[in-house]
Image 1 (cartoon, rainbow, N blue to C red):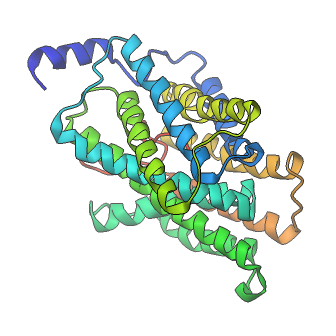
Image 2: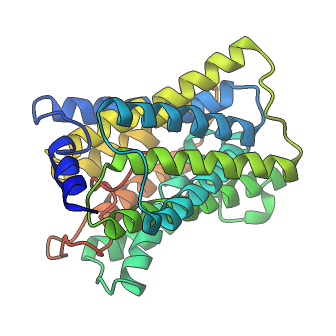
Image 3: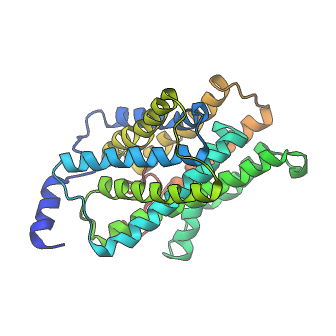
Length: 328
């Protein structure tokens, strides 16, 4: 970035959004509540899963880019960043591709819980790629997560219906894809030297993901046609709440709240998604499933806590819940 551009980015982009510490916790909680409704929007929308994902990224990405422009920030990125943004967008596309199918097969709560297993993927990448030793809590979290998953899906995998088993697999593939999305955005930030707007990167990644999803419909046979005005309104509401409003509320609070507290509060998302699955979508559950979900939530929180000794420097893996991590 040239000197003039660097000064402009510094002057106009003091943080993810120009919100101060006042009401930071309220914004974080509100953002977690807003994004917890994402699987409910997906369930109530009659469009195909890939189509729903396409409009979430296309509408949400366009709105985020408009906000970036209205804030007077640069939209275009340097050629060195294009690859990282495309990787992030492609991973985001597959994240939603798998997640929307998982929602339909296993329900809003379980699918969202499985998607948050991305913290364990990031822990593995931190160890294998960045040579960051996991903390004690992260080591304990992995067997806890496996125990929670076993209680949720049952010990005997063969008694589950093929659709349910496929939904669990899709949920875990969502976690892998979501981790790739986070790492792609982190790579863009590292290559950009930390300059520029995270909102711009997410907007461009969302639009790149929309292109990937449009191409995927050619192979899945799904149509981008919106069958009714109601579905159009549902898709718009889903895009604004999940991609724009949730990001604004959560990202504007992260700089003012500790990573541990952020990770704890963001557990509201899968917790409430499970609650909405029961209260709004009529899903039944057993005591064993509830216990498994609780254990998995504890594991996710432990896995998202960053060791205080870890270095916060460009090139290191961001802690899940750190400002580099976009909300689901």
